[in-house]
Length: 109
Image 1 (cartoon, one colour):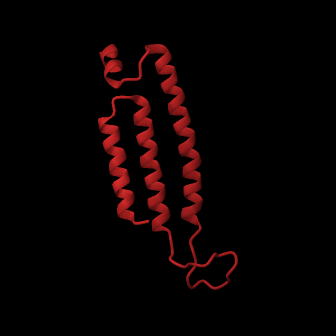
Image 2: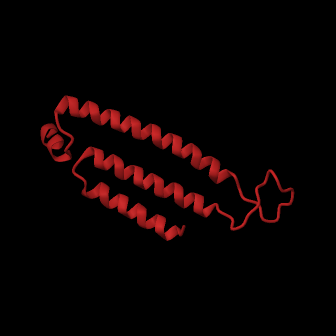
Image 3: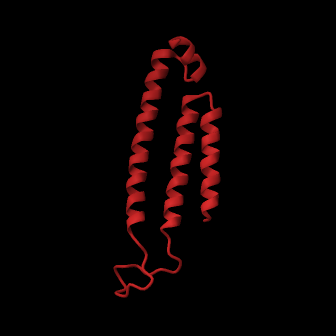
């Protein structure tokens, strides 16, 4: 996958955050940006036709396992924060009766 495609997906997520009027849509757009960043980092850490460092003893064309390990951690943290954001949005809906940004800002202002 091309890194430019990751940047395009990030821009799509940013556009969704700016134009969304609903909290759930904003959370989904944050998840899209997170997924695009994971794809970008995995793509940048990729070595074409690289060897697995555990099996092959030569260090000529070895794949670095650090970006993959960090991205697995990022996936777990992202799932946790998305679940927390959805839980908070449910509490907001029960308290205010809406998930629209404009209506929530009118009630606070």
